[in-house]
Length: 339
Ligand code: FA5
Image 1 (tube, rainbow, N blue to C red):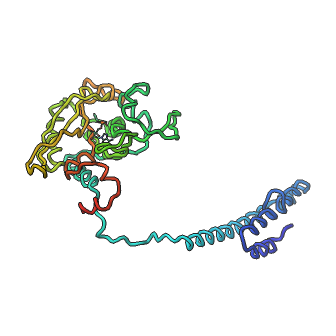
Image 2: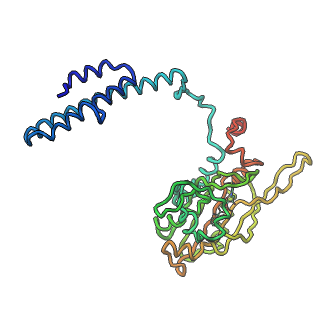
Image 3: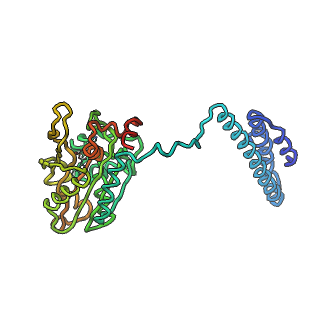
């Protein structure tokens, strides 16, 4: 039988990864010493088999542990060598005065504070969602052309029903979950990242932040929505804004609206104040009966409104930024000018 002491002494002498592999093959590999000994057990009497089998198992456990320890030792050595060649100082202390909240975070935090003061629940949800959450739960059948409205980014990973997971295209994907989780009456907001395969321009990015408001109770009407949105926008935009309500189509609301804002800007050339162009800032509407039904709510007894606002568009209006891509392109000159 292999002697543990001898095998450990052999292992002690091993000085590189190739020798270690050799050791493994000789002692622990399928065709070699230890395995051969296990094979011999067949010929023994039951008592001897039990006794020798236990000894062999014990030997294998100890040898394997010693082998793994040596293997880790070599791996750490390799990592350390690599680090010496290519040092990355992760403890580098970046000067504290260099950081501040991003403008997007400022606006989101302000909005969250307002919501908290009005006892809204805040939930962030996840960036990766199922097609059911993003589409079907909000009255968009998967075969409906409206699924194309958002130029969805699909992942290779699948959900339990075999459908591809996706990056959420809007925070409305949380509506169904919120109603089911908290029941009614419901006042909730969902701030979070959303993704679309967009043509990028000054007001469109492929990753952008949205914030979804959802209110459901008895007798909620468009009047409640209008009152809320006027107050909220004035508080968030830090300026007097004019709002415009247009009919808008979203499969998950009926009726649906788009809200645009405009405000006074200073024209450096004419040296006069003038009104900005209208900017679409949010989509909204009264929650569609099918969405309520899908979440188990009787739409003859309860009603509600929901709206989804682009945080970067809010920030653009608030800070007078002409192109929302500045918020995320990582240009420190931009970030510092607002620090
Ligand atoms: C929606 O995403 C709806 N889920 C909003 C909604 C919620 C409607 C609840 C009704 C009820 P829309 O695609 O219009 O709608 O986007 C909403 C807002 O997100 C826009 O008004 C805009 O402010 C912002 N937004 C949309 N696309 C982009 C983009 N590519 N880049 C930056 N902001 C965007």
